[in-house]
Amino acid sequence: MNNPMTRIAIMTACLTLSACISPAENAEEFTKEDAKKIVDPDQDLCAVHSWYGDGVCDTFCENADSDCTVECAAVPVCDSSSYEVEACSPSGTCEEVMLCGTTIVCEQEEDPECFFTPVLDCDEGYELVEVCATDTDCYEASQGCAQMFCQGPLIQCDAIPVCPDDYLEVDLCPTDTDCYEETLCGRAVSCMKDARCEQPAQPMCPADRYLIQTCPTDSDCTEEVICGITVSCMEGSIDCLNPPECPVGTTSVSVCDSARPCNEVIDCGIRLYCEDNII
Image 1 (cartoon, rainbow, N blue to C red):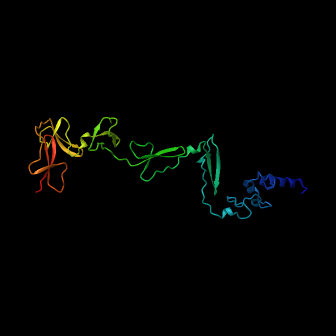
Image 2: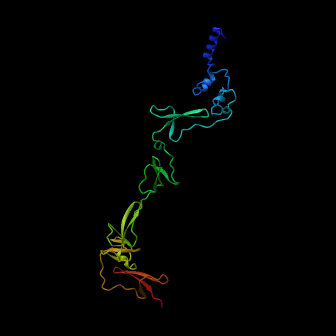
Image 3: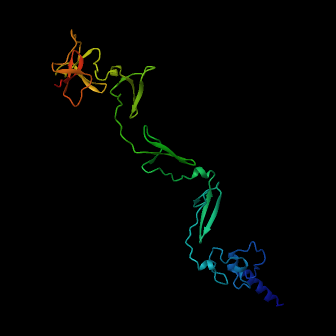
């Protein structure tokens, strides 16, 4: 060993094979790549550095690595504050995530709450829309920075609101009157109680018309629903010297009895209900 040429040959072999690297020296800097270069180590490097069972299959270990005998099918994923990229952007903050021999790069997002678009769900029968349509069943569905709306099925509505039979449509409800607003399909009308319905049994035509039995053809006559009763109203006025009477054999009543014969008689603009006399 004192032969200078022998010492030179051993030093050359050490430099070439890196066999003279001492694993104990600079342990923090000693890597698996360094271990693979040592041909005949005098100790179990995987045991010294706790490389057995570390999640990575090491085939260079002196003994069998349990990581090489366990099937690993898990896939690495980024956490909720980052997203997977092929390469980190120049201004980004990234970290590598390794699992089962697969490594991915995860880049941090400055505002993760607004970066990710959550999956928004609507109730059954509703669908996601950006803006609610007018006059539809619609509600807001939001999460974080994502905001959408859930809209019910669209229903075509062409109906026009009308006042009840005993109400009149007016432009504007007067104060201190029985008047309200009727709404349908996005439209509204004002409905005021019809004063002519204070005596529902005898509805009258408007002032410029008079009541008749039936509208004749080719005449200025209209049928109107007044207080729930359809009446025929002729244009003009009629003068009666004597009040109308029921025919002989009948008696005037305020309301017909369904169990007895009764006729409706309209004369001089007045409606009478004439019930047959029972002998």
